[in-house]
Image 1 (cartoon, rainbow, N blue to C red):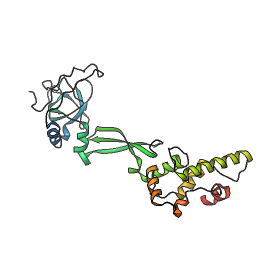
Image 2 (image 1 turned 180 degrees about the horizontal axis):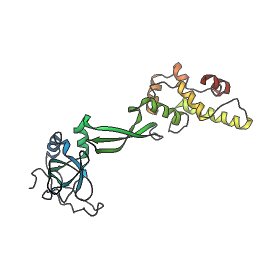
Image 3 (image 1 turned 120 degrees about the horizontal axis):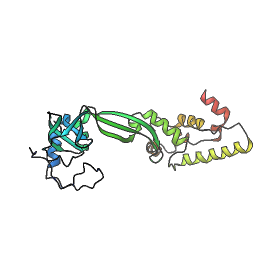
Image 4 (image 1 turned 45 degrees about the vertical axis):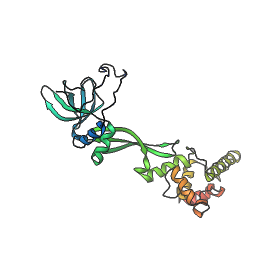
Length: 257
C-alpha cells in the first residue's frame, strides 16, 4: 500500500540508465523536519541504492524495494524503512527518502570512523587524511578529506616540517621562510661551486633544524601564522631565522648527536 509520507514526483524511470537526467519536485512543507525526527528511531532501517531495485541495508544485508511502494520507480539514493519483511526475498516496506547528511547528524556516536591515506597538501599548507564512516557496517561517508592534525597532531607536524618547511612544498610568504630559502639557495650554489663539504643543505638536515626550532603547537601553515602573530621579535621567533652556521657540517653533526 502507498506510504502517506512518501514524496511523489515526475522523474523518468532511470533503472537502466544512471546518467539520465532527473527532475526532483519540491518536497512538502515540514518533510525534512518530520523525516529527520523519524530517522532517529529508524537508523537500523537505513539503506542505500545498489543495482536495479536492490539496496544495501545496515548489517550489509541486501533488500529490495516493496513493488507497491510509490518510491519503487524513483529508487532514491538513500531510504529509511520502517520494516523489513521476507517472502520470496527480503523487502523494505513503509519507506521514505532521506538525505545522507541526516544520517550523519542522527547517528552521532553510533558512527564508526576509520582513516586512511595521510598526505601533504601544498594548497592547504597542511597534512590531510581521508575518513570513512560506517553505521552498523553500512558505509555512510567514504573519502571525506579532513585535517590530519585532528587525528594525529604530532604526525601532522612532522609532515609540515618534512614537506612544507624542509621541502618547500607550500605557498608560504612568511619572512623567515623566504630568508631561509634564499640562504639555502646561496649555500647550495657555494657548495656546487667550491665542492666544499663544510655545509649540509640536504632535506634531511633541514628537517632536523626545523624540528628543533618550530614550537610543538605548530602543525600547519595556519597554526604557524597564528603563533608568529603572537610571538613577533621573541627569542623563539628569532630561532626560526636560519644562519650559515646552522648548515655547517660540524654544527649539524653535533646537533644530531
